[in-house]
Length: 242
Image: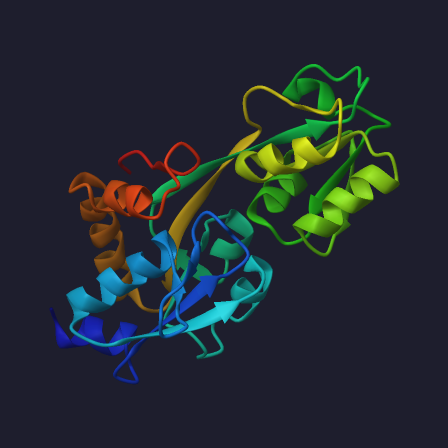
């Protein structure tokens, strides 16, 4: 491990890992010491171990807050969904894991497919600042996006304001559909949220190290083993080779 990579990734002698606490597939609980636990924190632990430094977790309630803190010297790596808007400030690896994003529609909805959603007059409820909201912002051209403060708020707005579709991660919608009799989850996906590792854009050598580490973690079975360890098989999948 070169001193340059260490100095770029752990300039304070510890790897400060920013974690999106709002993703229940990637953060599934806490350790006995109170640190976040799950696939995302374990990836950070593995990176810190490879660097030979301790890890310190910097938790964020929402991914948008984590992304907004990029470049402010509050974290060294950020585990978050990679999106072009975020990549303006963060150097991302390829994805190490993926999560399907799709829609929930209410009982009696005429919407039958993903393609039916983006039509004039339709309103889509979505959590503001999520990776899938950023994807929809770039790709929805006819329907209206109604942004809420978080996932639960987006569900409430979808129900209370009688919107046409709720955009979210499929695993979250599997819970939501149980709360709304007659509602349906659409087949397929409008996007796959790419969970990646990011660092400061100026840390060129560190970014290359992280990119290689992620590819090794996928190829060696590390990511698959973490998915199994934390009980999120079938909801979180190993991303393909870059």
